[in-house]
Length: 391
Picture 1: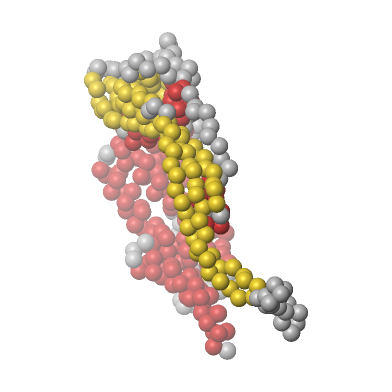
Picture 2: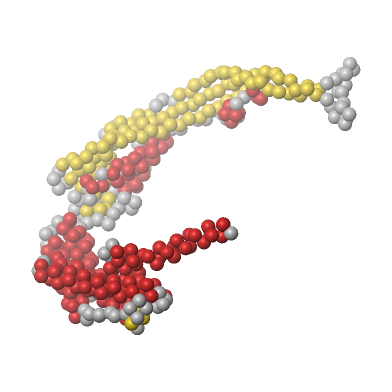
């Protein structure tokens, strides 16, 4: 029985919270939220009289407060207030439209039908919507005519607000597209090899592939091939200053591994025959012995290091904005080993190496290609980290 009540407890708590949610909202002065919650409750059950009482009270206060705010905003005579006024009228309309289908609603506490004083806001809603559209349309044009990409982006935002309210208003669609084009920023990314070391033919293409698509944002595009029709405001140079390939190294070493193991030693009689137990099994004892194995191991190693800087330039001011160091390495290794002795003495790691043979060393170009692959994510992270420099 105790576990049954424990099972019901979460459901009871949820129900109590749900019942008190509207009262709590009203207690904290959020009359609009209180009205919304109680409306949903009454929609499901008109006999939730506590919710009906909350609904009647919170509705009256919510409408009163929003009408007072509208009056205050109008008296301020500030053009930017138009959207807030429109939103308040829309809030009143939605609140009233949600309640109208529920009428009549009986308020048991007052022993009468609940009273709702509806306000006709249709004309004010339409006029405030038109004023909001006109305000943002004009604001967009003002910013668009400043002829720089940052203000064009602001203009784009204003035109999008107009479209959300009326997508067919004047030529707003064309203006939005114009603002989008003029808000674009193009960054030219290239690599310069100052190390004077021959690199794989596709090294640069692979390295610069990091900037295609995954680093693009709404306003910033990275190009690795210059387009004649584009005016680039910034450039990013991946400048390689040091490219080192280590010589081929082959180290040979010999060592011995030892291990104590336990083995069965069968008991024998004077004639050398195994002694049997009562069940006919061979009798034995466990004995400990030390085993050894000699290992001849060859380690092959070759590596490369590529280092330099990622440089950010503002082409409009011809200034270096940032110079960030970057480097990467590529290490090729091969282990080959053979044994002489009892392989039971060898560790698992040594056993894995047995049978491997020495291999031909990779070419310098192969090693450099691997170093370039390791360099790509580092360059990408630097460009992403300093995105604000070229946005």
